[in-house]
Amino acid sequence: MLRLGGKASWLGRMDTITHGIAGALISKVVFRGEDMLSAKPMNRARIITWSLMLGAIFPDSDILRDWFSSDQMLIVTWHRSITHSLVCMPFFALALAAITRWVARWRKWDAPSFLALAGIYAAGILSHIFLDLVTTFGTMIWSPVKWSRPAWDLIFIIDFTFTALLLCPQILAWVYRQAEGLKNRAIITWSVLVLASLGAAALLKIVGAPISAQTALTIILILAVVFLLPALGFRGLRVPYATWNRAGLGAALLYLAAAFYAHRVAFERVEKFASLLELQVQSLGALPLPPSLWHWDGLVNTPQGVYEVRLDLSEPAGLAPIEHRYYPDALPNPYIDAAKRLPEVRQVLWFSRFPLTRFHKEGNDAIVEFSDLRFPQVQKDRPASFTYRVKMDESGRIISKGWVRE
Image 1 (tube, rainbow, N blue to C red):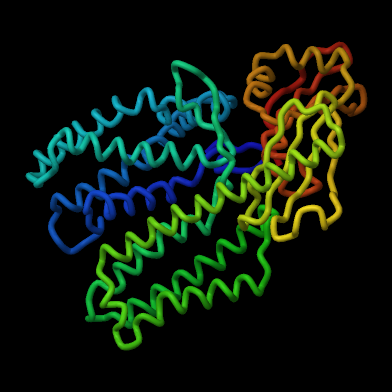
Image 2 (image 1 turned 60 degrees about the vertical axis):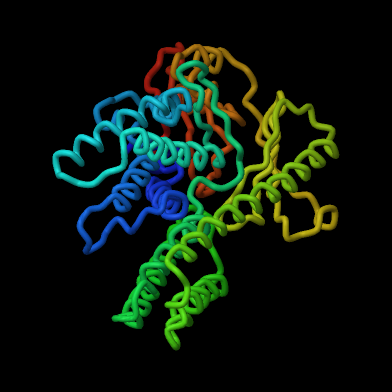
């Protein structure tokens, strides 16, 4: 997996697991699919779920090119392009449907028709494209016709809350499918999810977005209420299988609606911030910060540099003092000009929404760095993610160039 600034390329996509979970949930709610892993023989309903899940993860197959290429620029020029394209989506859906029909005939499975499978795969691919669009990275949905990167900036690239809303109802539907072994399934599932939550909390701490001990305890208690309480008196058995899944899809959609509203509020606060400081705005944005919908990163791009203001929507607007940081661009010089003429740097600057240029000397060598402040800095003593460095000697000859690694 390509690494930028010492961080894995998960910065470039919503995690593939979440896409697969979303695809499985959609198949159960919309297409009457069944659990993929079952003691039953493969049937039409299970093929539907498998197909939509595979369609939902298919676009991330573009990372396979990373494994066979030494091109460091693929993360900005290739990822989230052709396989994430609305233009190319029908062709991929038809190809995947043809492969599935061939496998079904070979295995003598009862599968949906070719056209039905094509529609199912299209729904899975569309779910992936949509869930990538709501993040901040940008998705080339019109490639190869147009190489732009729309981004809706609604949720962080990895959002454990959103993933949980998609996953937990499906697990509940499995736990409460029958009375036999119910309490054991509930206790074991709760224990596994608690361990997973603690692991997620540890990961959030590593990426600079820790949650408090009180929040962690609250999550554990919520999981206990949701997974263990319905086991008392076998009350959970009264909820139909489909109802659990519908609740999950509904909750996920409500979460996205809340994120949309929070983004609008945060964006308005960034606009007011820029107006208050009378900034010469080239572009501005409100980007989500983990781990909650309350925290946003306001960025304002100006001709001289980038302004950043961290927002907490739980605080009323206008009451809290505005604290911000200013990241000035380095003053132009021949080394920066030479670096900007490099094809790789032009690609980095095309990709960057909030670009920052830094310059310093190491002995007689000149160091030019280009960063995109859209991606949060994990630790203060380390460079921001997606930082491209060019090192030149005193005469301007390139000594080295590439993404900054830890």
